[in-house]
Image (cartoon, rainbow, N blue to C red):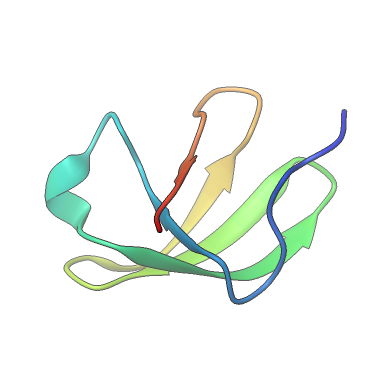
Length: 55
């Protein structure tokens, strides 16, 4: 699966919008580490949660 994100990209989690805007830290296989403004660092499994790019 090809991911459309790279480190530094701003994203939101559509299932948890209250997490705020996150910045992608790293991507290893299907695990995306994102630092969210309201909840800190989260590791997202891209097979379960579809992050949306924030412009």
